[in-house]
Figure 1 (cartoon, helix red, strand yellow):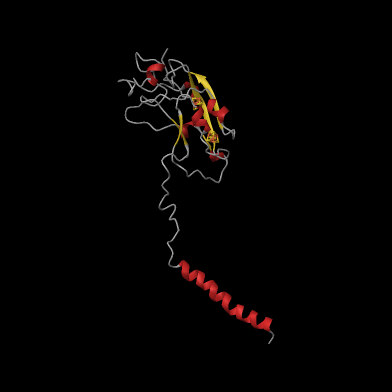
Figure 2: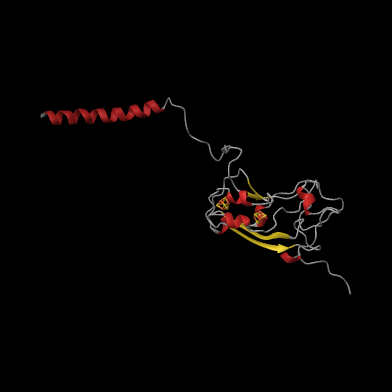
Length: 199
Ligand code: SF4
Ligand code: SF4
């Protein structure tokens, strides 16, 4: 047998043994397996996750429909349409509110530039990261999906401004809950019908 063939035959025996050696050593190492989704990963407190549209303490919306977030977005992922509040249908304390608000998570890179641009802190980011979906349509989140939930002190929009307060008072923190007797108005702009009035 030539020297070269002898070496090849020796390697043919050693290689599988060396391979099993790698497996054997790995058996005593700390396991890196993550039991997701049964044990969800805990993110850093300032993790950039899904967005949230915030409310004032009485339930009125902080978004004023200014579109600054949309202009700041490098991925063109935000679509906003503002509209005027009326006394009969009020969504925010000031003159304007965000009538349509969408974020396209097929585009968003979660950079956070939009929340830096927002002048009213209406837009912030949560720690939620489970945004994957098999449909592009489902990745476009609407205002209804992004709006913060209601606490006990809040009334859902539209509703009247706190009596005696103006927009500035809301930002000065003078409104801490919905005024007693506050009721939700009819959202005519969203196709809700008012009560029939007999002639
Ligand atoms: S996080 Fe970045 S990419 Fe996503 S909507 Fe905001 S600005 Fe656009
Ligand atoms: S979220 Fe903020 S920046 Fe965007 S439209 Fe509303 S108020 Fe303006």
